[in-house]
Length: 346
Image 1 (spheres, rainbow, N blue to C red):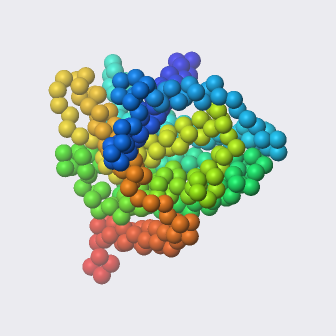
Image 2 (cartoon, rainbow, N blue to C red; image 1 turned 90 degrees about the vertical axis):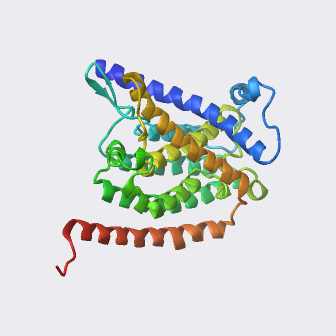
Image 3 (tube, rainbow, N blue to C red; image 1 turned 120 degrees about the horizontal axis):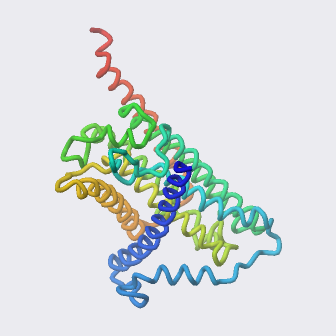
């Protein structure tokens, strides 16, 4: 029974952590973008407007949920739930710090520390396509359907590039466990940037670009191009139903940023000094600090770059990122072959 209690506590903590993170993330994005554009941003609800996101969430809860008359009700309701659940499930395997030792027992800071965590992440992220597709089709309207078709093609295209970008990471680390991948990066350059990750800069760039497309963020926000398709696949959603899509998008931004930190930036690695309690908490600080730097990069790009055309978006994925990923995998395989077995002519 204690195993089930521990699992329940981990899941509840992960859920609360993500909700608080999304509240903070939305406020940070609004403030950061307003600073970049010389505006004030949220300033009324709470100190520095920090409660504005909470006020928006409460408004969404009490707002009426309108169902289109031609909607397929069961699938229409299931779509935002699937989007939210897949976003939450993806976070469960991401360790936000080094394992903590309490009474000589080590506790992982991932809700589920499984040995195929990377495959799990790719599988769960691909399930998010169903939420987008169902939302557009079940709404019974042509505008959301167009948005869902765009989103499905976009997400499938960039999932291929994202998966290929992760293969060199697995080849270098020798594991599909996210915790093991992080541990394989420890001990170089002060723990911030592992030596072998300097070699994987192309994989890092491809993964980050694919992450922008996966989360429908500018300049790849073709799914929600208001000038062309009103509001995208969630046009016919309102109230809490729309809020679930909104929450899922921002949770996915945090997930992609946390994965980037774990796979390419050394995860929780960093200088660890002080008493035992501080040494156990500092890795969490380093992990979250690196993750928030990636999040701020997401926000900066949104405020700086214009939206791409749809043909440019698809061409970038299929004609550039995927071929470059395949060529890079071949080069990495050759380099590792020389490292492990030597030159074939010797």
